[in-house]
Length: 87
Image 1 (cartoon, rainbow, N blue to C red):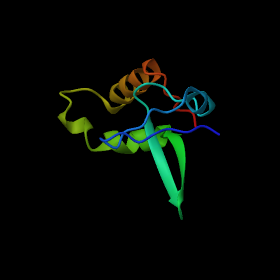
Image 2: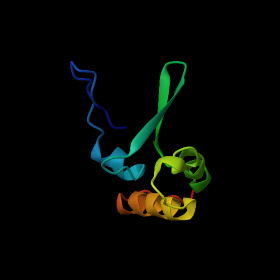
Image 3: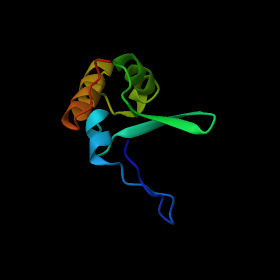
Image 4: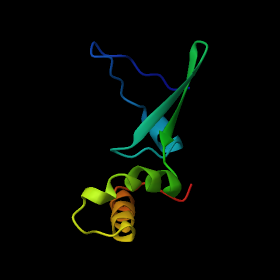
């Protein structure tokens, strides 16, 4: 079991073995699920269908880009950041 100390700014450093176990990368968003006095941590990796829903309302303001081009650009950006969309 790994431990981490909470700083005065309520921050922690995630131990290396935990980062490796959950395949966390710089820039990842973490989810916390609290049950009683315990918390489970996981890397948030949205499914491609979730990403499509986010873009649906934003496409109209993108100056002539098609939904397909916008979606492909978003996927490429996430892939370059090391995020797996196939979950």
